[in-house]
Structures are given as C-alpha cells and as structure tokens.
Length: 366
Ligand code: 13P
Ligand code: 13P
Ligand code: MG
Ligand code: MG
Image 1 (cartoon, rainbow, N blue to C red):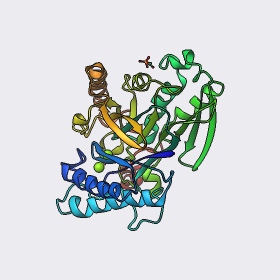
Image 2 (cartoon, rainbow, N blue to C red):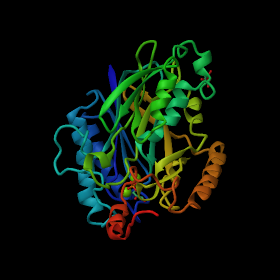
Image 3 (cartoon, rainbow, N blue to C red):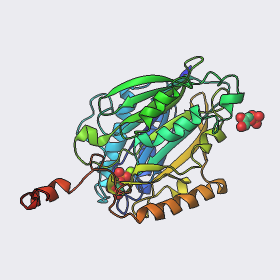
Image 4 (tube, rainbow, N blue to C red):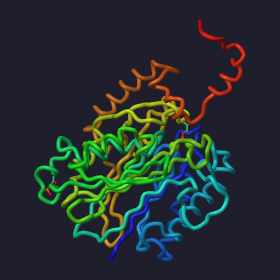
C-alpha cells in the first residue's frame, strides 16, 4: 500500500504580533482533522506550530496534489481564520490565504505544501522540519549537506545503498522551471544554482540508484504569487531516514551550523537559523531569530508514531548559543546590508517613495 505524507502549512494569524500560533487555533485544527480521520479521508495527523505558522501533518492513500486533501487543509485554515483568528483579533488573521475560494489545488493559493508518496519500508522513520521567519531556500544548505556532503553524512561513503549519490530537483521560483542534477557528478553545477537561495530552491531529492523519493520541500514564494508583501514563505520539509537514506543523526547534523537565512524582521533581514524544541518554537527577539523545529516519526500502515522532538536536546545548546552570538553580531548592522536584504529581495520598502521625494534634489554629480 502506498502512503502519502502531506505537510501543509499557513500563517492564519497569531498571538502577540507574528510571535506564535494560539492554542485555540491548534485545538480547532485538531478537531477538524480528527473528524477527517474518523470519516477515513486521512489515516492520521499531527498538528503543531513553528512560530506563527500552523502546520498540518497528514497521512493518507490519495497521492500528492489530491484535491480532497488540499481541500481539507484549506477548510482547516479557513475555519481557524473565521472562528478563532478573526473573533480574537489575532494578528494578521488569514495572512497566507491569498484567495477567497478553494479551486482544487493549494498551489498558488498561499499555503506551503510538501508531499511525498512511497511504499512503506519494514521500518519507515521520517523527519519533518518547519521553520519560521525564513524562506524555502533556507533548506538548500542543509539539504546539500545531508544528501551530498560526505563530511556531514558518513553514509555517502560507507553505506553501499547511498554510495551512488542522490539527484536534486532545483526549482527556479522566478521562471517557474525546474532542473534535475545528479550528485556527486554535477555537484558544482548544483552549488552554482543553490547558492542563490532566493531564486533556486531544492524542491525534491531522489536516491539515484532506484529513484526512491528521499526528501521534499515546500517551494511557495508568496510575494511572487501575490505581487506584494504578504509575509515570508516560512517553509516545511519532509526527509526519509535510515536504511539506504541518511541516518536521523546525519539529517540533524546539517542543522548544527546555524547558517544565515533571509526572512527575519518584516521578511527583510538575514539572520541565523536556530534549531529549537516545540516548546521554543516562538519568535521573540527582533521577531526571531529565524527558527526551525524537527519532529521524528515512525510511519506504520500510515499511522504516525511520535513525535520525537529532535532539537529538544542539550546537544544543540551550543548551536543555539552560536546562533545568538551571530544574531547579536549581525543586528549591530541595523539598517545596513547584509543584515538588511538587498533591495530586490526586500518584502517591502520605502525606497521608491524616498527616491520620488528626493527626485528634484538629485543633481549631476560634480
Ligand atoms: P543501528 O546499528 O543502531 O541501527 O544504527 C545505525 C545507524 O545508522 C546509526 O547512525
Ligand atoms: P511571518 O512571515 O512569520 O508572518 O513574519 C512576518 C514579519 O514581518 C515578522 O517580522
Ligand atoms: Mg505572521
Ligand atoms: Mg511565520
């Protein structure tokens, strides 16, 4: 039996600014998904949050891009907006719902979607990631490390089932095109693209030897859909682990380095990606710093055993301390790049208005 894992998220309003999802929002989401489980539409679910983003993890047998599953997620986001966010006047109620009515597929409508379908192995560990105050390209560096860097992932060298490497699908989110690149043979081409994470985003990873799906990420860029500032596209990611895929520890190892990502404060600043437990999945300092949670599950006949809250561990304390040191350092730049994003990447800006106001005062440089 093929199982589909769907991780679908949206920011539909939050408590105290863009800080955290309200408990009542998660309660209503659970109630709706529990009903869907009882009617048999989904096999299992887990509701959680990363900062102000409401995350719906669901399992079912309907395949990816299924309109019933996408419709269910849309219904959750709509009802949570109408019955909780709006009455409580939560901040930015319905923020990521860019259209009024659902039209069969969530792509292009605002919510972020990561889905994969597979035949369950005798043991099927998966790790799901969700981040706040960043963008889908934030996964580029850790996905490269997990599936292509032998200094991160020992299995690339010593596990015969991984030794043929992995194929990366990279999406150009501006042109809406994608290209598949093989690693290690095309590693330098891959790096040439994904080093520009605002444009080239790893969307899927496959094991080269048999084409098995290994990882899938959300690739929504809300601002490109809406053509205006609508918040950053806080991304999600699903990774399969062990037995021919990277070990859970190899997957987590890629997050021991708090790399700089775009999306902090007003979606317009760089900051370090800090791995945190679910308890600490809430953004504070300068609306951040950008945070990521990792939840481990064992999938069995589509049921989700877990989660293991994988960053809830002193082994990541040092990464968190380092992230705060980097946060402190980069914050001192105030409104200067590279803390502030470049003008083409900023989610909103006063620059056109400033240029317009100063138009007549600009004179030929002497
Ligand atoms: P086990 O031998 O405990 O299954 O561990 C294998 C592994 O991948 C550890 O990183
Ligand atoms: P979100 O994209 O998480 O809603 O954050 C928006 C923001 O402007 C935070 O400073
Ligand atoms: Mg928000
Ligand atoms: Mg968010």
